[in-house]
Image (cartoon, rainbow, N blue to C red; front, side):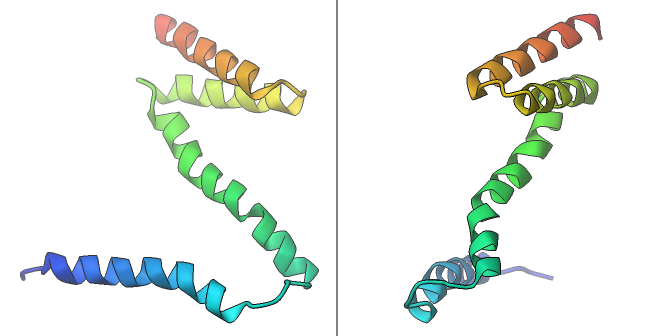
Length: 101
């Protein structure tokens, strides 16, 4: 079975363009529905989380250090630490954990 790369490129381009063009052409006025507005508000955060969380676990040499760094980062952020402090804490947790594993 042979696969034509140009078909894949064409389909990917069509889907990408449809995602970007359809909302601009179909939605002309302000969105007044609270549910839709709330959904659209959280889309960037969910997209970032979906791309980031697997990378946090798999970016280290062992998944244990990735999980420990993730838990430490979530805890620090929960208690109001800044993004810079959370990043430093997570890097430190990974460094120390990798030394002992």
